[in-house]
Amino acid sequence: MKSKFAMVVSGILLTLTGTAIAGNDAPIKIGVLAKRGADKCLSKWTPTAEYLSEKMGRKVVIQPLKFDAVPTFIKSGKVDFFLVNSSMYCDMKEQFGGNAVASLVNKRQDKTVSEFAGVIFVKADSPIKTLEDVKGKRFACVKKSSFGGYQMAKRLLQDHGIDPEKDCSAFKEAGTHDKVVQLVEKGVAEVGTVRSDTLERMAAEGKCKLSDFRILNQQEDKFPFVHSTQLYPEWPIASCKKTDSALAQQLAQALKDMPADSPAAKSAKCVGWSDPLDYSEVRQCLVDIKYGVFADKKTDVAAVKDEG
Image (cartoon, rainbow, N blue to C red; front, side):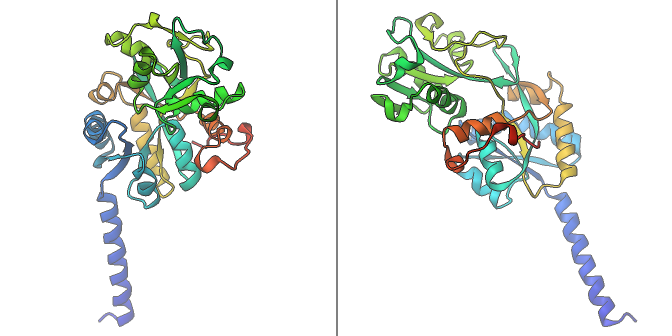
């Protein structure tokens, strides 16, 4: 007959084993920033979850997250991974830990890009010629939290002695990239900023003409879309601090193995995923513009190489 002590130990082991099995059987949850609503988020990313489920032999589910919900879900451990814009990733990493495990390789206008930039533009006949001329003008952006739709441009303008929120005669958050373009087109705003590829996409959709606008501080490089700022890495998928490293490696490899012609890639409008890029320059941008948790930081970009 087993001693009472042995029975207690056996019971504990059985409980722990059962918990471990239940944990291994639990779905892997990926929190995704649903910038255009939950339905569109699920439509875009569910095929990726299905692809990962098949490759990893374990169910993967997408958890659409509103902007304000992202920190809550990561902090509380309700998701195992999170897919958000580049600046939000740096913000979440700063607050709660975790690391990028792969970076998105986007497909935009049939072009493959792993970086993006900000565009500062005016009407083609505008007297505004330089970044310095933006001071005192009516300015429109997507919103302050948008990396490509504002934060990149703010950093660049700050480098030229201008804070759009203080030095422009009007500052408007339009909510979407398309609305920013429309505000400039109608003359409601004299200067606008959007993420790269927005103007080309809208022109292809018949919503505007590229010839109606002029790009301020236009960069001449191999990047296929007009832009004013430097280039920054595309969205990453990151593991949460609590996520098992072996699981993170398994998911990362599955993403990097994703075929460009797969239903998952087509639905996500990408050609696949790469090893995680370096997000230290994104972080430095947030430090420079004193955004959120970075308001009081003075970090040398060379000292914050991303660990992912």
